[in-house]
Amino acid sequence: MRARHIVLGLVLVAYLAAGLAYALITPLWQAPDEPAHFNYVRHLAEQEALPVLQAGDYPAANLEELKAAHWPPEADVSGVRYEGHQPPLYYLLATPVMGAVRGASVEVQVWTLRLFTVLIGAAALVLTYRLGRVLWPARPGRAIALVAFSAFLPMHTAVSAAVNNDLLAESLVIAAVILAARLAFQLRVRRRGAEPALGVVLGLCLLTKTTAYIALPLVAVALLVRHVRSGGRRGRLLGDAVRVGAPAAVVWLPWVGRNLAVYGINDPLGLARHDAVVSGQLTTAERLSQVGLAAHLADGIRTGFRSFWGVFGWMGVPMHEPVYLALAVATAITFLGLALAAARSYGRASGNDRVRVVLLAAWGLFSFLGVLWYNMKYVQFQGRYLFSALPVWGAATVLGWETASRRPLPVAAGLAGLAAVAALTGLLQGDIPGLVVALLLAAAAGVIAWAWLTRRVPPALGLPLAGLWGLDAAGALYYVQRFL
Image (tube, rainbow, N blue to C red; front, side, top):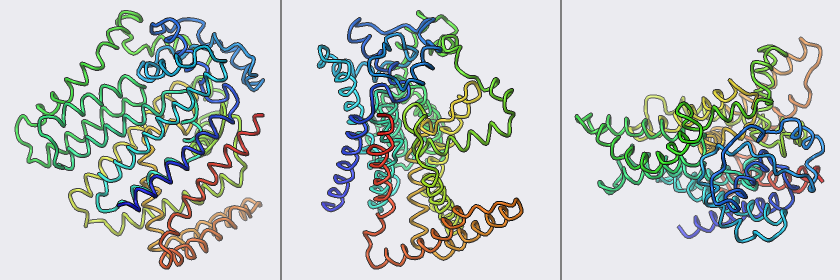
């Protein structure tokens, strides 16, 4: 246990080092929506009242000019206030932090709030570890690997080092899943306190960000699983729903009531007001009319994949193309490993195994559907929106690579097969993608060598995660420097 905690501590230190680098190196305002989030906190600190989103808070023409000019530090961003409809919890917590540096320069205020968000990210990692221990109580190493994936993902670190409410929402969703999973697994919990505690956390999710609303269906799935596993006793499901829903309503409904008073009876979340204010934003309907469905989907998949791993600033500073190709090959290893793991466990899964799969699959599905719903209205091919279910993608990666280390030959054969398909397709089109073929063949040989090494030196299992941290550091020390 001591060694496990030391490794976890080293992971957290490595995350904090990278987060600090991103927070201090990233130029002022060069993070998505950061000026609007900052102005929300400043409004609370100065006016001691919640902002009201209104016409003019999304100055579309001015925003495009500022983006084109790479957000000069002296630019006046006081009119960028389009996040004023957001639930208030993050901003309320950040207000005392802002108050502590109220007389300092804007740069110091932004850096201070960024470091505050980095610390929230560290809390999210601790919760991720607790989630891993609930999901795999007999596999603590897997829980640490899950933390390392979240900690070292370059785009995730960059998001956690900016002024925004994403990391608090992520933390609270993870906390809600931990409590819900304990109920679904029927672990030993305090019978009179587990459901109300889950309800309070659920209410806090609803007070933080609309992406955190996926906690609602996740809790419903967990309670339904618990109901089925307990024999479907009459009244049990309804009683659990009331014990969870009542505290959540107590926490959340005052915010809804305020919105009804401010935005009207038909806009309890302020989303209709937001849609009216950001009228200059590119809509999906406009984009489809310009390029067509096929090109729109292809661009969405390509941009979404890249920005999941790392496209910095306002989606304006990508990494080099070979980096994304290497990450695509790593993702292929993940899928091949998952397919082998699923085939091996088919028909032999225990009750807890099935519960684990149901919860993780539902979490990932709800996150994806949320991103899809948002993109039905606006063109937002940003992979960071999938971070609401980051532990799911981390678990898939850890399990896939773990299987690859145990069964390297089928995975290597799959990679070689993909190389053959790429070469044949390129041959038919008259342009063989030499780099892609070379990377796939090198990965096939690398998986075999890595599996051989891990059997003799078990800590070598952490080499891919160490490489991910190296990419994370490169994001701050090299790619973000391209802003300057």
